[in-house]
Length: 477
Image (cartoon, rainbow, N blue to C red; front, top):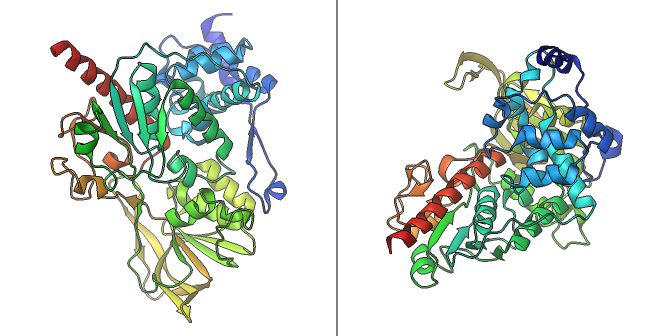
């Protein structure tokens, strides 16, 4: 068959869609909603790939996974080899296969998506990672001989974990410092169990430990140790800062100090990291609310709304967003799942006051909005309609409007430059090196809140920079 005919056939072959739990099966529990592929489904989907000579899908991947190569192995039924191929560039395929927005990255550039549905690259990535884990197959550890160099990585979110893995594979001693009691950062405390099971995160972190990465939890850099102390007293040859953006933004409206008002960060952390939904098995209860409003339109807002709906005592969850459904930045899949599960959407609405009684939330007052001219990002700017105020009867409000950076580390390092919002400034963006010698940074602490995979991409770039920095220092001695 000619390549042209193969391309046409692949474009017309329907995409194999993964299975989901039914909305009824999701009620009142935190079971993973997306069930993924069977081996037969994975092979059928992989056979749709036309093995482009110049694969644009790879260019759309922030960590440059060898997509055609691993897809070919899946088509041949060589699932473990496919997992090994992915792990050459991405040490967390079980995570990225679940939470990476492939529709805006690798799949967006898939050639067969021009005339049909793009290849389900994310689903195939998830499948091979799960297959390797579930069959208890231990993949080879591609670790180079020790270089004798020691690197401190501050923050164990996606960026920090990526740096640690890449440096460990190159033979450097990587030590991760995590402020909380569980490594994983936003992967653990920010993304719900039903979207990213904690056992998946644990398995990926265990892989890092097998690579030789040391992880120190309950260790707040900036309080216990400063950057200078790490480098001058503890003998670290370089430092990577990947502390993310975990300082929540609020609305600045009356009533935000009432009981029952949460930031999405606090709400999701209480539930995800501290197992609040499993009280009394875990002694970290969350107050039971009947009607909860979630404010925002991103993935975090959807995560909070879907989490709230699963908590004991919740009868109704209303998501308030100031633009229309089309402008929501959340993934289409997450919006669809929220709709299936019963989240009520209030579009073109913006909160103006939270009312209460005896210190507790009773109502959320909103103004109706209309869309005007487009913003710089192409989305139409919302504006309030005069005299359109109305109230929603709620007993809790979760605010999911993004987050800023914690200034702790920057405040304890005078020669670490930051911008007006507290983001760490980069001197060389090709390697994510800061203005402080030997210190690198990446992820949300540099860019502001973004995606898991973009933080991982920044981590890979920094790991390459750190490796070259360490090796160049050696050659100059």
